[in-house]
Amino acid sequence: MNYRHAFHAGNFADLVKHAALLQFLARLMAQAGPLSVIDTHAGRGLYDLAGVEAKKSGEADAGIVRLMAAADAPAEFAPLTAAVRKLNGAGPVRRYPGSPWLVADALRAGDSYLACELRPEEHQALRERMHGRRGVRTLCADGYDVAAEQTPPAGQALVLIDPPFERADDYPRIVETVAAVWARNRSATALVWLPLKDLETFDGFLRDLEDEAAGPLLICETRMRPLTDPLKMNGCALVLLGAPAGMTAPLEAICGWTAHTLGEGGTAKVYAL
Ligand code: SAM
Image (cartoon, rainbow, N blue to C red; front, side, top):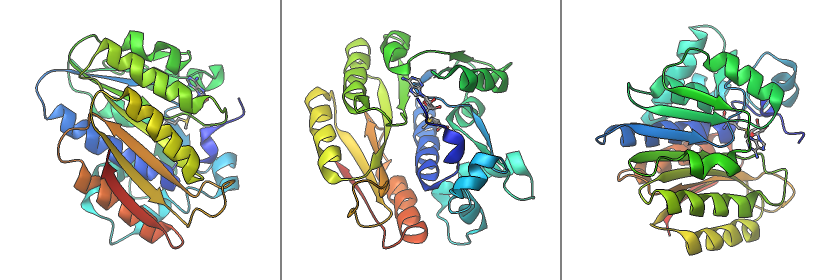
């Protein structure tokens, strides 16, 4: 386990994932009843963009720093840019919120959030950052193992699956996790993040997921460059399961701006399966 999200925080893929997550949460929260959010791969919750890791990769400079300076960013990014502004004031973007920070800030009374993180030192930082937040729990655990048992058997639930993809079994484990969550609660929804390297791997994953799916899948591809080098992360994809109505247009706006503005010959598409 070498993956450290501090190198990648605030990159183009985080922008797509976090902007989409906030749109998804807003639509679920517009429906009746409390919401349970389970984050299988939570990370440390908050990232220092002036730290060695972020400075070394330069990914945030090509991502969130450009988004915050953009005059043409679509309104669908506004909840994310507002969260970043709240953390940084009017100064340079130094702190970037991870999914735990964004979800914890969005919770209403009666909602709950479970953040799972396997690496002990990342979990320790996460725990400190989430301390005292209403409705929030953290677990130092394998998120795939606990996602289904932590999903309430009825009512609104969102499972966020955002693995590092440093192991070959991440793809089958996502499919197994989604199937187990649905076996427990048919109305649960999920948001899965994936890297786009080559289309063969991605198509194979979608076929496996479709076999388990209890409802339609909404796919959102952000290709930052043509997929000619399978060893590179050429873009990212989101798969939404049980997405509430009205998610297609916001996803098109988020992925389209990211691919066209931050990519090199980038393209984006959103489609249902
Ligand atoms: N979701 C976070 C966000 O949006 O801010 C970023 C998560 S990062 C891509 C993936 C995290 O998963 C890393 O912090 C890594 O240590 C952790 N991790 C790796 N395998 C895991 C597992 N099986 N269960 C829980 N966490 C895991």
